[in-house]
Length: 278
Image 1: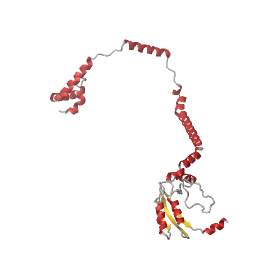
Image 2: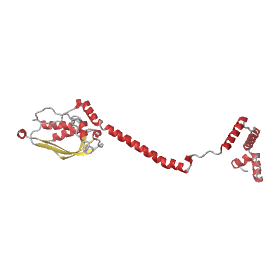
Image 3: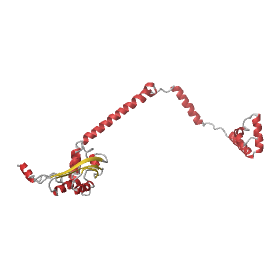
Image 4: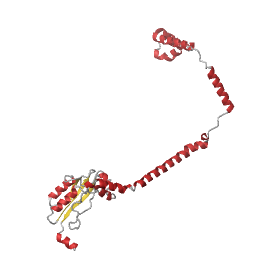
């Protein structure tokens, strides 16, 4: 005897249509032994009986009249005229010409707006730099050990880190700018003050980081006075003041730049300077 899962299709059509003799016999034998399938066949018959008892819905008189009126109007007016966009020329215009035309117009408009913005912003560069100078006037410092001790005037123009970096913008991406108020400038002043004659110098390889500090990687030409090297390391670590170099954002440089720095102190006799001035 066949199982329930083997007769699912036959049970659905049993009583609805005539099945082949062999199939019908198998279904009847199975129904005689399976109460679940008998209940399913009975439920199917009840559903078909309920559906056959339903009344057919007829359209209302208003809907029928409206449909007839619409049909007469369409027959009287004839077929609708085809739109130009549905023709071959219209399709070519929409899918070929229009996208390129719109793209070209948008590109030209964007270029004009960008160029106009750049041209309008150029006159503001000087004003921005002047405003920065005024805002940071309280932070202005003198370049240590850079002024002439025999100059007639004691007044020097202050140098700001932003101004100095702006002046070196052509080379600052590869050559980091010194911070005019940084620890390296302070170190140069201290070396001048404690100079005891002769020349003292050191050549080091260092990495300048994005925040302006530096790390010594190699000492190429060491100095006789180890204190100078220790002070140089402190200056690179900004322990003697502000960072020795300006931040990377001012120079528009990468996060780390390797440099070779030659730091040398030269003592010039005072009588030579006076003779030169004469």
